[in-house]
Amino acid sequence: MRKETVKDKILLTACELFYKDGYNQTGINKILKVAKVSKDSMYRHFNSKEAIAVAYLERQHKVVMSLMMGYMDKEKPGAHAVLAMFDFLIDWLKESGYRGCGFQNIFTDIPKDQNSIKEMVYMNKNEIRQLIYNELNKAEPRNKDIQELSDEILVLWEGAIILSQIQKNNWPILAGRKACEKLLNH
Image (cartoon, rainbow, N blue to C red; front, top):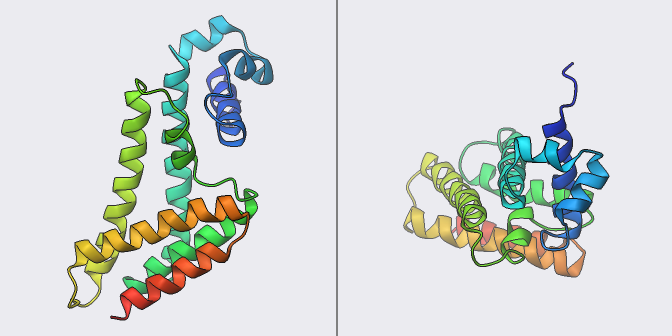
């Protein structure tokens, strides 16, 4: 087993704090204090808070995609796998106390000039969009344009996340899943 490095401590602490408290509410000094590392140590690995946030989002993307793919891989390719994305949300968001999506949260919490963070958010959302498209493309051709259908499902999925965060409940995810089923059956 690998020993936790200073970089790991900083990143894992920032992941927890950014997700739980928000990006603007989490200063460098708080990260350093909780991680129990010096400012010099931090600057050896990250040149700014923005760089830490980008690393956080890279990590978050890998973790969430891996967990979600675990749900999707248990289902038949196509519509069933897409519906499993909503099943993943039910478990993930309930476990997080309905804290929502780290990408949605950070995007609404960053200064305008934090372009590398914005790029990570775009990458995440575009990859999910492409994942839905790829899954639907595996199924038999539909009457509806697959890209349009994929986009509609993405909007349902993302909306379910934010509304479940606001409501602190999974009913928005269940409603999103049901609407997705209706779209897929037309």
